[in-house]
Image (cartoon, rainbow, N blue to C red; front, side, top):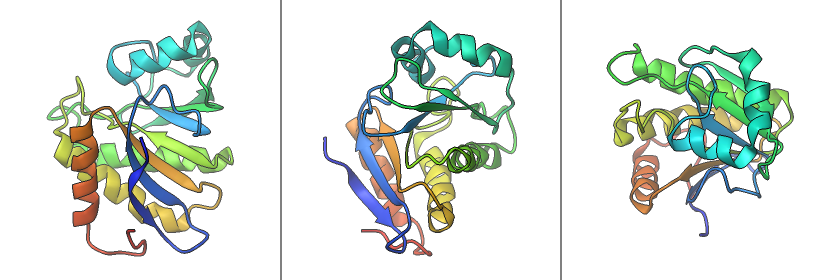
Length: 189
């Protein structure tokens, strides 16, 4: 499905796209983000999909990096995924890990930092913490899109930051949230 909800900064800045799709099947992205558990183990939702697609080598690489804390991000190879890297983020459990908005925002900024450190040119995010961790999708979208939009003008190697949402409803919600953000350094197109 073609991307929509694009926002860009200056001509050399990264583009922000929102698309519907399976985060574990994004061959045009150099790296994808895993909505991980603290053990970086296979699980349900995004973590399960990514680990199933990547194969057992991903968990073998993850084990020595665990445990991670809410807001933290670590990077591994993509293994059998079509992506060079997987960046694993532990989002907050809504109503438990506080301050939840700060911790969720840190997932996105820490993932962007790791991508930049590894000269990644394109990165895909799922909706971190919105599954079993219970973060309301609209609130999570506002935190995520604000954090990423603020960083777009300062990214040096990333050229595409993409939100890959499982459902059409989630894609539309993210587009609406992006459209409602105050105009800042990155005009939306």
